[in-house]
Length: 406
Image (cartoon, rainbow, N blue to C red; front, side, top):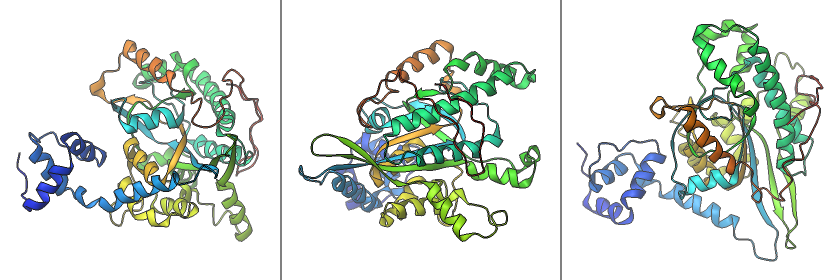
């Protein structure tokens, strides 16, 4: 393997402070390969050549954020941030994490996931025109419960979305798909009853947001296509505090919901058709989305390291892809203790995994063991008590009022 040579003091310093496993973890987390490295010296050179030795400032910020979160004395309430995100993207899963890794523990214990496809290897069949409505529904449902635990809010949304997706699949079941998609649709329909449920991230997943401009012809207008493209990404639908008082009681306080920004927009805009509401300002794949959310949290000093962690290049305003490891590092940096993720992407696995049905069932059962978070988000509620609710009014007006099922 050909590597560059660096100052001996720098090489020695990095070599002494980093084990082989830590070097590999750092390279992998930063999306750099190391497959040609045959010895520790090669890994050290790769680590330095990619500039990872310069990340000391970012590391210190992460540690400082974590220290701040635990600095409260025993006489003060404990405050923990909860962020809720809805993901609209293409999804591809790959290698699983060793269960003892911090990232594996975080996603297993602190992240509640609702997945449309839910079953490993099953794709999500989308109606692109529904993407924006799904986001608006999430905004409204969170807005209507400003002091509630996110468990019951997620239950209301997921019941609504599961009903929609089940109806959507029922209609596909009676159609005659082309040979190109026949097996894929058959696989989805066969797993229909398990789609739209809680899941757990146990492996790396990449989300991509690119869409060919040529597909715009499938939409009623360029405006509809633009609306779809703006909905792609990681849309923040709610941020709130979980407050644990000294007597052990738990309460919640909302910090942010996009509906509040929509109300400001209505008050300032004279022509809503000419100047449409921009939801990308709450989207974590946009530079201005990161800046907006961190300003909401009064953590402007973290904007630069956050952009670096998420993979923004100089002058780049929008990401084309992001993965769970980058998101984990972002949550760690910002001090997000718990996360709700509404994942509308596919559960497609990289071809090298050869996801057979027995392998699928084994992984599905394993994920379900961790899908309910009985402690992390607050008081445990009986999962058998399903919530029902009517579809809320969205930013575009009232929708169907069918009862939600879960």
